[in-house]
Picture 1: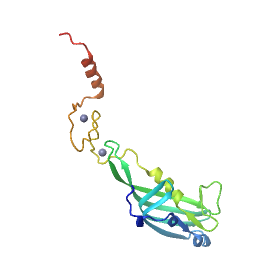
Picture 2: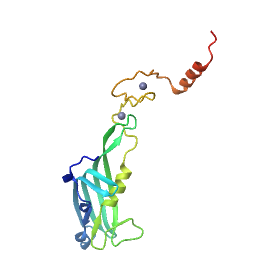
Picture 3: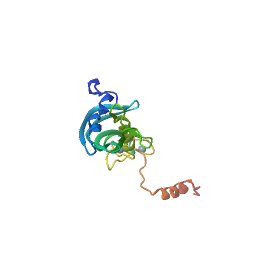
Length: 180
Ligand SMILES: [Zn+2]
Ligand SMILES: [Zn+2]
C-alpha cells in the first residue's frame, strides 16, 4: 500500500466539517455532504482509500445527527490461500455529535462549530474490516503439507479426501507393526 501518487493524498482537514450554519438553524434543518476521497488519513495509523458516499447532517435538540452510507474497498488476506484481495466494505453511519459537548456522548461539535468525522470513520472502518475473507468462493487454499497454492497448481503431495476422524485410523493402521 505504498505506491500511491502523492497528489491523490487528501488532507485530514477535509473531514473537519464546519456545521456552524446548521447549529444556527432550528431543529430539523439538514444538509447532505458528499465524500469522494481518493485517500484520507483518519488517524496516524489508518488511511482509507476511495471513500465515497453521502452523509446527511441533521440539526436536532442535542446537536448534529450524522447518517449515511459510505463505501470503500479494503485490502484483505484470503483466509485460505493468503493472497491479497480487494473487498468492498460499506460503512453504515448513524452517530450523534452533541453540541455543546456532553459527558454521555462520545462525539461532539467543538465550540467553533467544527464536526470532525475522522475519529468516527476510524472506529467504523475498524468495525467493518471483514473477517474470513475469501479471494473467491471456491478458493482451493494452500496444501497443508507443502504450502503450494492449489489455485495455481496441484502439488505432488498425496491428496486424500479422508474424513479427519478416519485419517487418525489410517495413521494407526500405518503405525501398527506388520507381521509378515
Ligand atoms: Zn484464496
Ligand atoms: Zn502439497
